[in-house]
Image (cartoon, rainbow over all chains, first blue to last red; front, side, top):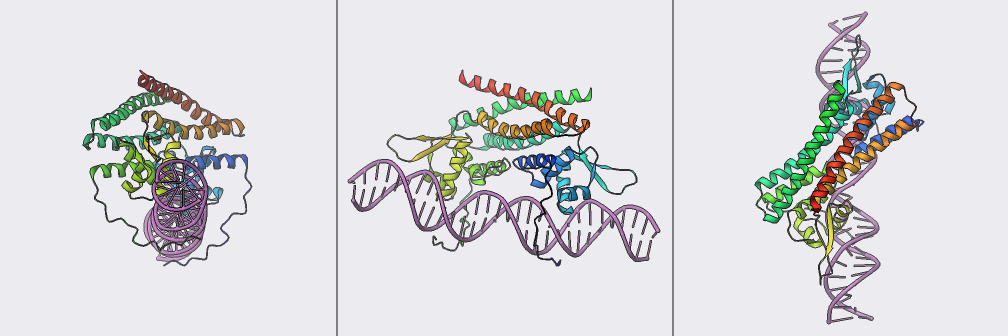
Length: 165
Length: 165
DNA sequence: TTAATCGTTCAGTATAAACTAAACGAACGA
DNA sequence: TCGTTCGTTTAGTTTATACTGAACGATTAA
């Protein structure tokens, strides 16, 4: 069992809040609504504003967070495709930076959630025994989704194509 | 100060889980990822599958939840436009039912979150002093969003128009 | 006016999630 | 072969939030 000191005085000494910090903070709060931990949002914002890739320690220090938290949240963001990990020659550390096709990646995240939701709905339509009224309500819902979904994916493909030119 | 009984044996006696119940439950879990309380998702699913509008008590009982919870969560869903409250003649109670243009309402919810996020980003572009590289990264992000956003809203308008025919 | 029946609010509790410090393990360099 | 320096994992604490029972207020009916 690890020996833990009592966690007192957790609050930081109010590390002077620059406009960039405020931006990162607002971004992080807004990303919480997308289901990400607050710190993940902060890392996202920090890397977005950083021209050079940042090491894990740099991220943790810059955000006043523990390295543990930085570790799991960078991994989370990387897994979601919102940041990427790179290596720097002659350096053993991991570095992270914002991905280049950030918008498309962001959209993929959002779409993924939708698709989970709607696949549940489609399963329901397929398997549930419901009245015709309810069935048509659900089918209608899914048909409209399908059409919008298609349009959206087409638009995203165009984004990607434009980038590759 | 209200006198509360110790909260023991909170767990329900495993109220036999029908396919419809499982569907509702899956839906509710998936909606948690959209930032809604679990019970709100359950109410949403319950009303989706219910041909007749349901009273607050009926909802609470059917879900094995307290009336208090049913009250705040129906209000939440109604405020978000995912269900609607109606009155039944000769009945003092409030009834709730699934809205007719459910898909468009759902999309409005999703879009609202995006727009918050991107307006923060645009504020950042406008106000932050960043290097040209970062600025163009952010502007590019927002330009791509703007174009996709437009396409999406057009598609939604078509959905609404089709409904009004 | 009183009793009953709604919905809402409030105080307290339980649960879940996020974060930290410490332990751990792996890759390197002396 | 140690000692370092990384990143990750784990155990525990803190914090946030959802939920419940009870009190409350409003409306209706007698």
